[in-house]
Length: 352
Image (cartoon, rainbow, N blue to C red):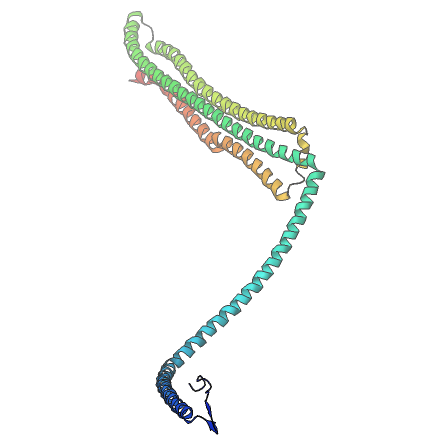
């Protein structure tokens, strides 16, 4: 406040300054000093109050800090440990990523080198590539041809089996009719024999001839008829056997011819498509791996083996043929056993 007061100006008088001016200046200076002192005391009081409030807040904050310091420090240490572990793991992952990047770069370099080498080989051997593609295409055609041949063989086998079954059924019907005819003939012969014996007794009594001689003569004639019937039965059985055997042989020959024709057609298609003989087909695929060639050959062998197996399953086996022959032999023996029975009818009737 005093610093802001203007510099005093005193009036002069004889022998010095004017006394009134000096007194007025003293009074003004004193009043200004009192006002300034009051202002400073107010400021000191305000500052003291602020300092006391600040000290109170500091003490309160210190108490709060002391209460939570241990827990926060522990939590911060735990977080620091977790962050340290994460940092270590991140560094390890960074190292692994760097190694992987280097490995991938090396692999990319090798792949580019291999690609360049393959491109050079493809440019140097375009003819072999075209031949290999043609071979793959024709191989697929061969597979389809073999499958078609297998289906055709199956249809031929089915038709032949149906035909063989029809022949067997016809032979069985013929044999049954022949047996029925033989039974009817036997019954008729027995009835005729009975009537003839009655007539012979009457005729023998009338003409005085021997009944035994006439009965034997009639028995011989009837025996010839029965022998002819038995011969017909044997002929029917033998004819059925021969026809079934011929059908089996024709079936096997036809299926083999069908497979051979399919293979020849496939080889012909290969030659037309590639312009290379069949014996040079394996040389076309010299760019392929050994495993691919082996798989292709095995696939073709499986198709051919499947067709042959289907053919063999459809043909009568050796055991089936043996059982059929045993049944036919039993039928022949049955006919042979029945034949003497027919001829002995007359003798039995004569004895009665």
